[in-house]
Length: 130
View (cartoon, rainbow, N blue to C red):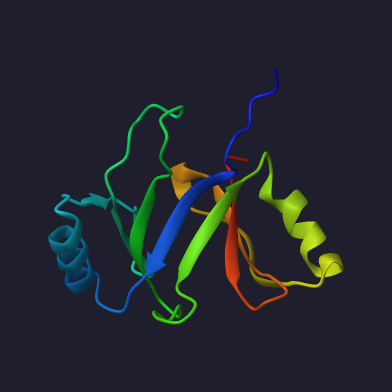
């Protein structure tokens, strides 16, 4: 029997003030969020929601993110889909009617991402380790 796997591997909620947003989500959810160290980066900060280390656990990890030149509000929640190499899926975006917001780039030890725009104007992410 084939196993159905949810392709969502990560989500991000973009914020203007990461401390204010962290306080909001910690208060509302009554969960402690954790800093995600990002080496030598002044362009973005991340605070993660709690998640199970077991990849088979029924949850999708995610974070609050402050990123230079990425506005919060409206279209500021990004769902990431797992890929072997995000450049492959990225190469299909334009022919399917979408756009590339930011082509594949490294996020250090956490792999690579591409930020794309679907046909409805929604940003979504592709993530891979290579």
